[in-house]
Amino acid sequence: MTTPLQSFYIIRFNDCDPYGHLNNARYLDYMLNAREDHLREAYRMSLSDFAKQGVGWVTTRNEIQYLRPAFYNEKVCIQSALIETTETELIVEMVMYDESRQQLKALLWVTFTHINIKTGRRETHGQDILKFLTGIKTDHVDFSLGFKARLTDLLNQLKESSNSAGLS
Image 1 (spheres, rainbow, N blue to C red):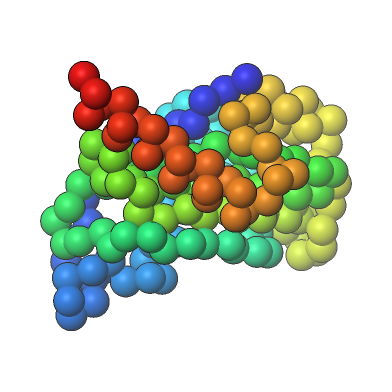
Image 2: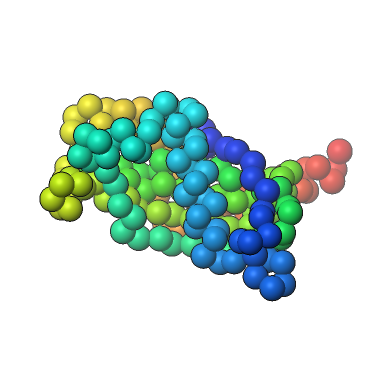
């Protein structure tokens, strides 16, 4: 069982629209960069090392819900966790919060497909990789319930947290 990994980022001016909001496409960049940082820092994994071995993962699906804008110069917290694995795919959840983790900014589920870089074709994960993936997969998310149920769960957690903070 693992908990989500997290890191903090400051929203940069050149990533924002004329209103000072983080551009929708840039949410993906921030979240994917955070995941790569998490892999490197927590697991000593380098995607370029895998690429040198001729294997990698490509994004084949994104499901994202934007809830609140991230603003220029705002510090955000991005969490990521592996929530599902198959013989050929990984599903990673990435969540963007405000710095204090009181407001949910966006929820993203990304499906990565394992490929042979030389052929560009889908491949099954090797046993070593599957064993590793099983070890880092979180059990805090029930993938089978779906994206909308997960979003509702996260919003309810924040609401409960806010209510319990108000009672203290």
